[in-house]
Image 1 (cartoon, one colour):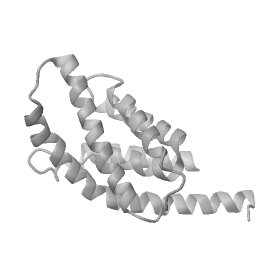
Image 2 (cartoon, helix red, strand yellow):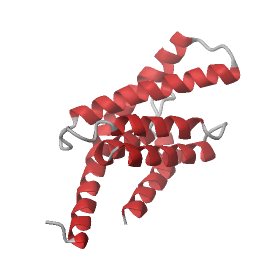
Image 3 (cartoon, one colour):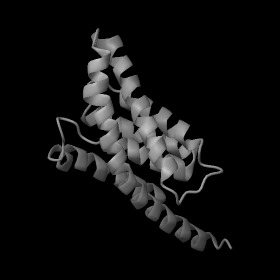
Length: 170
């Protein structure tokens, strides 16, 4: 059931990014809800599930939106793995750490994507890309990440409760 729900969330996100989010862009910047979803799942489930979900979400982006197969999936997997390191030892109910992780992950994701684009396409202005794309997208994604994290947190609580009942654990 968990795999089905997670797959459904990733597919719905892909559909929303290609349809509805086209209409809520501000100065040609759309929120990167995929990063918020990867961070939320990695923070709630751990390193390995975070890496797998990051890879799957990135692969979907590569297939439908990317110019090259592998760039988004590699960055998504790395983001999910690194954010999954915070799985143990932190309260899952709070919003500050997932919000901070989303901001840092968005900056990391976009800077890595920028560096990979320089290697593939050639010279691009760092300050322009930082000011015009990275910082606005980070702020926009941070706003959406609070809503996304709360939704995924509630879904994860329901799934854990159901798994506990089916396994008859305490």
